[in-house]
Length: 178
Image (cartoon, rainbow, N blue to C red):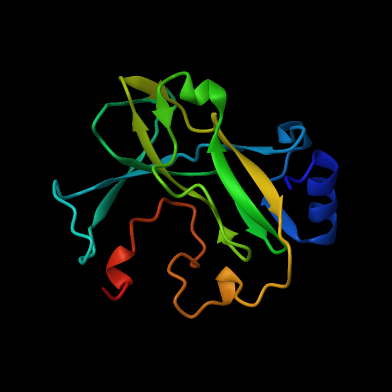
């Protein structure tokens, strides 16, 4: 079951949902619009290795925007810091962004109960497109959880993405044992 706007507001009031900064104008019928942060990241290497730490370099989106190119993976970040303690957050791209040929995540659209951070975006595009810091980039949808939660993300010993950040975070797959 997806939370409605009134249920999202109730979650914000009782602290089970945190969105910083929060702007009531960004609240939709059953979602909350999030915005692209100023920082992007690119992997330094041409070949990525799942068993190794792949280093990234950061770049800032200038006021006049930045042109993204196809066949390049850009890591972006939301302006909004979020916490979700009693529902499952899903991040989806806005339809207006998709109609520009921009995908905001390759696979990681679902968060976990207990996720507390900004969202790293896995941005790709189908043709060159200019983007801007602060532009609406996605929407958070919250699903009700059925049952008690034993293993909150922010309490897991092996959680890899819990350090609070305002910049995109590279893959931590290399920390897994396989």
